[in-house]
Length: 126
Image (tube, rainbow, N blue to C red; front, side):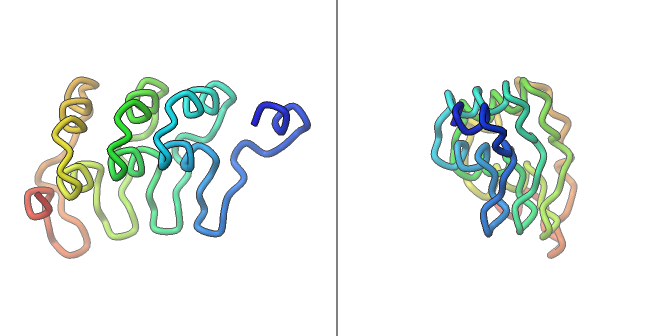
């Protein structure tokens, strides 16, 4: 990856699903690559076609090391996906207690009463 960036490559190039290299690193659970891409200025908040940011993907894939890196780097935790779901909806849907602990440890402000487009709270997804 480093040679591509040195040659002027776009760090936020996207796939057909609008995944960036950072999202792929999160999806594949590669914290060292996540850290490198974050240090190189990768967009922490770009969304996939369904509105998932790298934070959403980290939660979905149980990629907790990458999630911590994203949160430390200042990734937006208030975004919602196209279906109206929040990161709390996602954490509940994918049943990752460790993720909830990480979010609490970073003092992420999550609204447990927020509803998605179907009118469901995170509790409905748990």
